[in-house]
Amino acid sequence: MFGGRKVQGFLAVSALGAAVVAVGLGSGSASAATGTCATLGAVTSSTTCTVLAGETISFVIKAGNGGAGGNGGAGGNGGSGFVNPFGVPGGAGGAGGLGGVGGAGSKIRGTWTNDTGAEATLTVEVGANGAPGTAGNAGLAGTDGNQAIPNGTAGTGGGNGTAGGNGAASTLSISGSSTIALLGGGQSGTGGGGGTGGGGGQASGTPGAAGASGATGIAGFDGTVALPDPLPEGWEVLPTTWTEAPFIEFEEPPAPSTTTTTAPPRPTTSTTSTTVAPGGGVVPRYTG
Image (cartoon, rainbow, N blue to C red):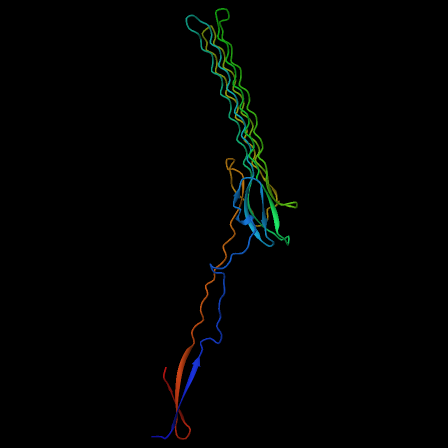
């Protein structure tokens, strides 16, 4: 009707001028390389392991515990007195004192970063527990009375227990170089005192007096951290007891982080039709 010309064109509109792709460490990525210390786990005897240049390791160290003191020996029983037709009992010997418990070896958690510029070999030395003390000998029983010597004699006292051994230190050091950590072992407990002997029974009819118990041994002091002093930031002293065995444990390094990759949005399109009317006027028409 108008004698005009119809022109069709195609317009592509992109939502983003450039796509941004996030790249991360997925589960399929190779984990960072580590030395042998990082995967060594817990050890209870001396060994060596390696830390790569720039690598950080985390560890827990426990030193040896002090040995408990030996128990004191019991005192001997007193001999019975002689009286017809029955004897007069002697006193019971006193019980030996218990040995003192050993002190706990110190325990810490810490970290170390290898800034030497090269792979480092670490020497791991786990301190041993101190040996327990020896128990005291039991006292000898007294002699029973007889017709010639009617009174029973007293028993002899028991022997004192001996002190235990001190716990050994645990150390972590760079082989042939400096010490990273030095933890003191627990001190030994002292031995228990021996019980005294029981008194002898008397022919007069008086029983023998019971012996006195031995004194309990003194507990050893807990170990302390010798190096580093003071502890660096992030290190901590951990609670422990003298019954926890010494060890050094290297904790697992943190797992690599994972980043989700998002695909870029698809571009959107639209088609534009235009009609050129007489006189040069343009009438646009959009079809999706």
